[in-house]
Image (cartoon, rainbow, N blue to C red; front, top):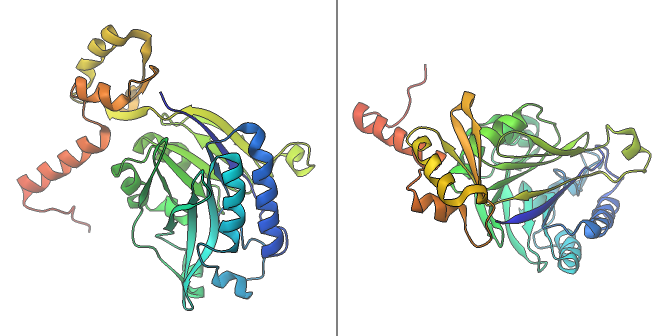
Length: 316
C-alpha cells in the first residue's frame, strides 16, 4: 500500500500582475499546504507568467534551475513534498519551452517535461514543442506530466501510461471537462488537474475525488483556499478483463480484504489495489501472472503487425 497525499493549487486566470507577484503567491500557497502534509503539490500551467502581457519578455522564460525553482524548492524542502511548477523555461537565448518542472522533497529538481503539443498561438509566438512524454521516478512510484492542449492528443497520455506512470499531473489553462475521467480510466492513471476555474483529482476508475477552484464563490472571497486535496493509494494498477478475469477469484481467495477489485464491466477493465503493507500490486500481478492493460494492448498491436505485415494503422 502506498498512500499519497495529493494537492492541486488553482491559480487565478489573470495571475497576480507580475512574475515577482506570481512567484510570491506560489511560495505563499505552498507554505499554506504544509497543514495538509502533502506528498505532491501541483501548480497551474505557466503560473510564473500568468497575467503578464503577451509581449513582455517574461514569456521568453527563465532558466531551470533558476529563481523560481529555487524559491519553490526551498519551501518544498521545508515541507518535505514534491512540487510540479508550471512555467516557461528558457534553455537558450532563442529556445523557450512551456514546462512542468518536478521538484523533489529535498528541494532539488528531479526533471522537467516540455509540452509536446503547444497551441498554434504558442508555436507562432516562438514556444518550441517538446519531443516526448517522459516519466520520472519518486519514492511513491512513477509519475509524469502533460500540459493543457496535450490532453487533446491521445499519444501523450498513452506514452505516460505505457512508461508506467501511476499519476499524471496536468497543469492547464483550459479545463478539459469529461476528458479528465476518460484519460484516467482508459489509461489507468490518477489524474491531477491544476486549473484556474476548477482543479480536480480523478482516480483510475474515472471518479472525481476532489475539486476546487475560482468558480467557487467562497474561494473568490478568500474563505476557502484554492486547493483540491485527496489521499490516494498508488499501489493500484489497471488491467483488461481479457485473460485476467478468471484469476480474480483465486487472488480474492488468498488475500481476501487485502486486495480490492473495482470492475468496470462496460469498459471491460478493472483496477486492482493492494491494501496490505509490504505487498505490492506488482507482486500480486507476478504471482498470478496477470498482464497489465498496456502490456496487453502492446501485445495486441505487435501481433497485428506480425499478421498483417503493416506496423502502423492506415489513415485515410
